[in-house]
Amino acid sequence: MDARRLAYLRALGIDVWRRRAPAGGLAAVPDAQGAAVPAVALARGPASEPAAGVSREPTAVSPVEPPRESATAPSGASAGAPDLRATASVATPSRPAVPDERPAGSTAPASAGPVAAHAGPSDHPPAGRLPDPAHPAARLDWAGLEEAVRRCTACPLHATRTNPVFGVGNRQADWMIIGEAPGGDEDRQGEPFVGRAGQLLTSMLRAIGLAREQVFIANILKSRPPHNRDPRPEEVQACLPYLFRQIELVNPRIILCVGRIAAQTLLETNLPIGKLRGRLHRLATGRPMIVTYHPAYLLRSPIEKRKAWQDLLLALQTLEEADQAGAQP
Ligand code: SF4
Image (cartoon, rainbow, N blue to C red; front, top):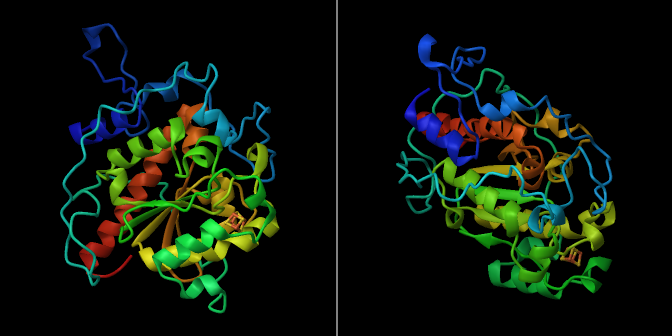
């Protein structure tokens, strides 16, 4: 395992057992390719895949993606949770010439390293709905859109939120991160992905050479559902135009969709996240999207960080291949 990949795995909080000489005491622990493997993968059995349609009420201890609140304000959940904040350095990326006009310095590292053989093909037809050009949000600029979200009463969630959570980050980013909905900390602070889940997301981004400030982060819903329940269809229907407009304005080269609900919503499918991650999707607009686990889920199921790492590599590979072809992904 090369030093670069080792650093990435450590940045994701995955301890790596390194192969020793036969007389070295600790037995070698090769994976199928003969490389060292993350220790966490050996310490636990396989986690069950998050399933569609499973309730995420805050009091439930669920084997699927946990409530947002449980990750941002854990009680006893820190045991075994990795400290992901100090190990990775943010690479200064080199950006091959591509036909867009965004500033340099906001794309992926020069080399992503190998992507797992299971990384899927990109021949899936575009999925999900197209933005409605007749919706008022479709014509707004950033200032107008932010104000529209701040004043929005299009669904009942406006009555229970503390703050709208519009989104944050580089509005000309190459990468856009899309999650599900604000949790408790996000509702209080008005910013997506704060708390422990947000810290892990930041570490995941750093592991692939991206500072949080380089990407744009948003959610499907801009207001917190009470008790972190799943978004309801009518809430998604009311709020999606804002996200679609954000995507148009940012015009990211790739979307990283985190979590089952966000993925199922954007792709309009009921497939479990285990079948959605690990492959390249395209939204109805043709924009490429990679699905991976929500950081809140990864805090509860650290064994899945290895798969999340593969998803990040797949996203990097998608951009690299487009760069080499001199085209958009
Ligand atoms: S969730 Fe979206 S549609 Fe509902 S009130 Fe908030 S901003 Fe408006």
